[in-house]
Length: 100
Length: 100
Length: 100
Length: 100
Image 1 (cartoon, each protein chain N blue to C red):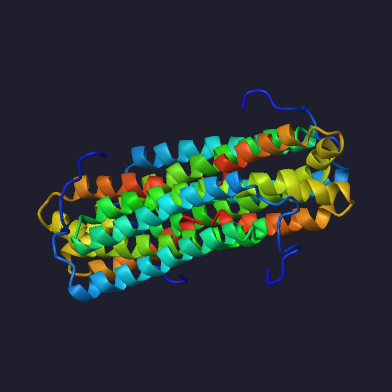
Image 2: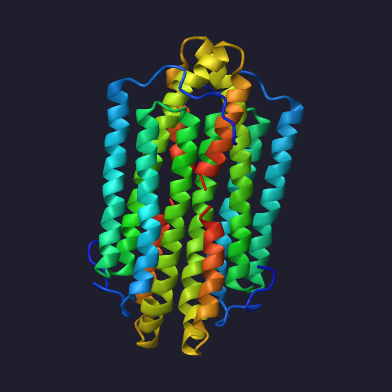
């Protein structure tokens, strides 16, 4: 998975799209800092585990948003160009890891 | 899961323990910021998915470290005090969510 | 998710394709029976957990095979017909559950 | 993970406990056979994916039941005997794989 099929999505993300994803990532970044504080304050382990779990769920959601857009633009484009198989296999490869 | 059994771990985390976890969380925080940059630069979707997957893996590792310590200290203590079942059920409840 | 977009894949599975998936499912069925025997023989819990984990991995593999074929045939077809979005959203919906 | 700490759980499973787990595994076995039939009948891919997802969830539930009993008996016993760490590490090792 060193070399991807492309450098950019086939249809550039609009500023709005970018902002929506970045906002969610900023919230996740804040949650990660929140856990650092919890460790600092020596908070109860289970309390920390719940927060880790929440971040994982939030990250997965971002992943699904990215995947959906990827399928609707990049993969759709590749399919129309007769190069769908390669694009599909590339995504599957990453989904296998993503699901771990 | 509103009320946990404790406010703090039964054996306080040492400064070294805290620092080790915080260092890993800082690295994760940096990775989350890295994805924000990738979105900003309109980088290829699959490239972003790979990074999200890496963060999820790193977060899970932190989760296992916290879980292991929790079992070795808090749960072990609860078991010795004859209150193991409640502590075990509390952890299981969170593990079920964590694995999602 | 009660009503799916189709009753059958857009391109029927060949006998060979069917047999390949069924063989893997038969092996998984055998593994599930194996765990029943382990419980009967009162085998060590961790030993059983390892087997459950192996079955989950094998099932996921079957899932990815099905998903890949689905994308290469059904979704590709839908995209070419200008109905890709609905098909993509249907798959995403299920992947979100699958990853849990 | 070739050699486990024990051959059997520290407290033997009662007939009732065995039966409860076996019943759930039999149901799962039936679900796996159900998917074979679906493939035979060339059923829609997403329909099959939903069933695979259901089996994975059911298997995980069995896994949590086994884990809970393991912690309440085998690990609790090991902790009381002063050998908790090894038992905890053994379980953690398997949980890491289980969560994949």
